[in-house]
Image (tube, rainbow, N blue to C red):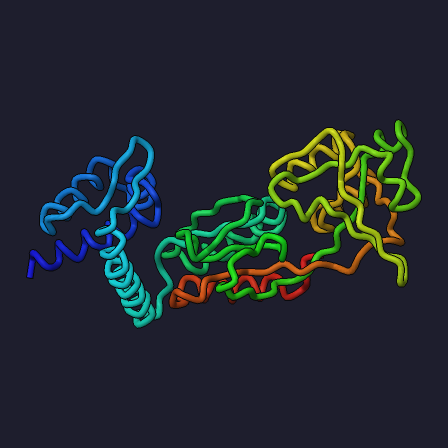
Length: 302
């Protein structure tokens, strides 16, 4: 019995190494050292009498035998995860680490302020938060869920649960407007310094409408950043014109730190979603967090 359990654990570890692409990435995800992971895989190969992985200094790749063996290992890993989620659901008490990816500006402006309410209600749930605007494929990662705009959802197997909506507002600082003037039409933006987000190309296609007339202007200028939050601070500093979510800039507009531009040409609000993977059982910690988000954002985050 001891041998079979050890073999099963090593098979699950092998699947994890393949999924992460390296011993070091696997070690980080499991709280182990790379040498410990490598040793276990070596022992597995010795037991089976075949080489499963080709090693290099930075990554690993499967041998032909490894590719055949991986399918069985991945199935075992998935079954163990399903069994663990089922066992946790029996207890009725949400617990464990909740790992999520959240778009940067929304995470800072809307999620972080309410997280203490969740952790107070569910003290046995810990949170690992990654603020990122890059695309995240949940089926190929260890994230339990993500909070994304439509342009950031790339996983066709994921379920998207609408949390609310936000209008994208064109704005610039008073200093920029004083120096360069304010555009009076969408076409006039081509004569201005428009700030862009490097990680989500669709966010740099700014859409406008006036009744039946529509425009798309591609943001072009001398500044790009990897998050909308950085673009927001660049706009406050007077670097140029930005198109940002209303929840991020509404207080600055009210206080006069930013000036709203072309309000008569704004598109309809865009939705924001909580996204989770359909291939995984919905564990109690994820279920209660989704309920918490829906309750918190029942009034749309605009």
